[in-house]
Length: 438
Image (tube, rainbow, N blue to C red; front, side, top):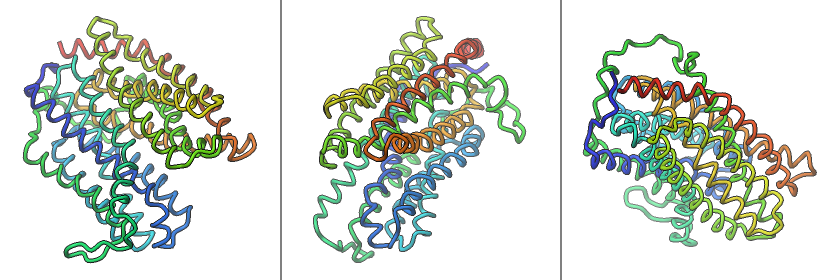
């Protein structure tokens, strides 16, 4: 039987979480940094807004989502440490090489490389954490990892902005061997390098933990995705519900700066500073608090806590986001927005915890990749676009608040209903997994 006891010491296990969490920070910075460099890249390469939007959104999201599934299956079969090292080198090199882009096609290929590389990280890390920690500590470990990723997502623009501020008004920066490079090129090189360095550190200091004996003896599955077997249907419903909550969070995050500018006349720099601050506090605190809460409740036998915390987070988070659309003052908007992110970000991680607690080790990578596929397509694909569509129906760009209200009213209750429908079978899966580990 698959045992839940740790196979490495707690010190080494937490070192792995912090090291891999640092890599997750770098991953978010590398995927988000392009948004900060839109104007100089457009000017130098002669690109259009549509081309830049493809690079920032669709190109990354499609490849990240689709490649993640085979990467997750691979993580269930071969060394996860090797996968992480190889793919970190890939996306770090592609980010670094983006600084040499002279055309849309080259930059598009590098963006695809970043997406392919990053697609393997979280499925592999989920599987590693599950084999390094006992069942009762997996949620906390996963929470720290996800919180560090949230930190990277919120700090990407800050890091890029600090680099550009340090460069100042210089048009060219002389580098050894490379000669003169432009500021946006240097930003790509600086943010791409850490992934390569961390890959070396993982190679030197992080061993691959052995899988449970049952995992080594498990027969190889057929060509079909086992994640879509009927027994895992409750998890898929939970994934859909959680992804609808993230569609609210991602959509709001995409348009909140513009909303403060259009509705309250703020400077975009002030909007970025305030939103970055409240997003960091709300998102990171939510993940850490709710993962510790669910562990505490489950240790006391309340297995229903896992799906119900997600239901509560979807309900409360969507209500706060709807309230933000009615806020008459900017600071009240920021307060509701921060509370909404606290609930949605904090409870969104429950889907990842559910994979660790219910799936056998031979399926964790694949199931996690399916969650990331669903989450990426719904959150990045639905969230930002739904808000602009609704605002257009209500009168145009000056009615973003209508988009905030409608996406909260629709996605929150719908997501909570899906998770509620899966609640009892999820508890049954959890009990089965505990018995399997006993």
